[in-house]
Image: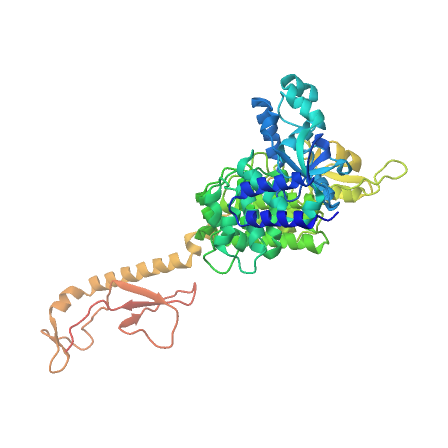
Length: 620
């Protein structure tokens, strides 16, 4: 039913006033007066299982499973006070909203209990976490608190014993102010304004990710985003994280995935089921929104992975986050971002819409976290596999997602020594009429039992090697005795057999003569040079070179000449060429200047030996 013109005009005026960012709470309060006066706002008490959460709640984040459980624990500690809860909801006007709620609960994997979307009557705009806390108890969801649970499941009896008022509201529900669906259809923006006003005055403070979503929504609706206008509207609810606006604004415009915001949507889906709403601080967001200084790399997948690391309970400082810009991490970060991009392309090419399949979102989120930790040198989470390469992480993800992996060569061993490419695939066991395995070889191969594989049995000292696979019979050779035994495939799969890598056989060099001095050409060349020096010394001594030089002089001008103070017979003056410098060189056509070549019997290679002059006479 359409709204009356005068009612429509009155509501439109209040909406315009609230959209301006000023007097948000006052404008919404006046709006409620108008709605109630015209029969568009009613009071009703509804059991929690009849109330879902509106997709626009908390700027599209809806709610977070971890926060719901934390709220339930807080209520059980301080007591439930219904008067402090201002629950506002809207009638369901779009059947797609039931689908949203069903996906939300299914994505949490039991952390939000169960849901029959057909039972939903209204969708919450405020008190959403409180209502879901009541739903957890109503459907006996799993919960860690022993005070409220029995065998890990919430118990209404336990809750009643601790807080009878809380138990009563689990059964009968909260008191709601319910807005007519006609109002929501005529003014879609009114729901966001109402929930923003509630966040300004109410229970759970707005998170930084919620503010990021609001900024992105406002910016994506403008062809040229106006910083000041968006700031005024985004901060109209006075969120405690308002100081983060500038870096959040930069992040929203640069790294959320364009106007569609696909990167942000994927991160939000992951956060709802697997992370927590926590404050990261302005310093962290300044780093996360900073441009990559080298090249044009945007590394959006790596940035969102870093955000997931910070929101999954890991304490990460701005200093640690800044490592992604360090020169030593430059190549690692860009390579990691490329692998994350490739992995998502593989998923898309397989026909899967990532944003419509929570299982894929959660697996990819865990991959992002592990890749970021490895690239920045952050420690792995306890009880998780440690990796050496991001390609090894991506390969394991392909196995989990059922995709053909382009990183099979990078498969890494598990803690038990088995490759990640082995043992991860679960296959249906086909049986023959006699009960034997029909697909034995495939099953064995999945566990690493292939030809040539070394195997052992837990609790026994036997070690063997698979030498044959025939049907459902495996032939194994004993590595110690050389004996052969036959093992049924079903026994090998079910009786504690595992593969292992045998210790490498010792390697040795039988004779070290190949490294001896006689086979080392350089060493022998050094010996020959020493012999040349020794021969020169003997010649100098034999021919008394020092005494002979005492009777000789060198005339420099007017012409050079060697003069002797003594008279020598023909061929009797002997001058020995000597030097402290003996060198080797490879053969060349021209002789070496100021040097004398030594004639030797050297045959180890083609090198020549030369005595080089070491005396420098003055110029004439």
